[in-house]
Image 1 (spheres, rainbow, N blue to C red):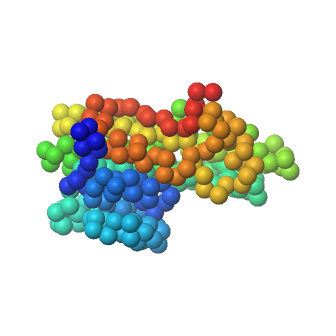
Image 2: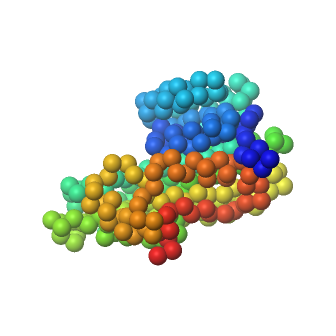
Length: 277
């Protein structure tokens, strides 16, 4: 049966940013198809919370956790060496970690995400995590995959904002002047677009070692946002709503398994149709 191609028994997937909302969902998706999971995050508290939840759902599965700063090559290498000492070999890498600044109506001008005032320190910080972190993890774990003769899969989590510009009108507040309006920062679009470029590069780089690379570009996910924001964003989406947090699980299973064996270098956009309007 073709459904067998979705199975990941005896495969190990490492997920960055696993302490977050979608990191948890990606782990759930892969546990559903029998993968072993390595959860990583710099936030140990939320990492352990998510690990505990996953262990309750899948008490018989192999679930590991590592506190890793993905902006540090040394931190990633330390984790790799510890995994190897424990005979854990990564077959699937999901580059999910990112800094996603939340829009705050009370932002002061000197801390504004607006382009005119966006600080170089904040630019470097967000690029270091969202893009450099994906580069370093791909370099280290991808190189390991390429020498193992097991093949592998790299999946970069991008965004619908990798293919469209943010519509800043959905963040607009009536009680603020034009120069005080909150916006989605420039870094988010640059990072997510950069991940698609990284995907295309990696898709051909290790092809002789049977390593595929694709990216997934989700749309907005319900996470208790204010009703006015949800209404504005939903009006831009043909399906008329944002995504539920578990609606990307099947895509994760597809992209990380042999079910997508002929997909390589592709950016799969799942945004309710927003990017076609």
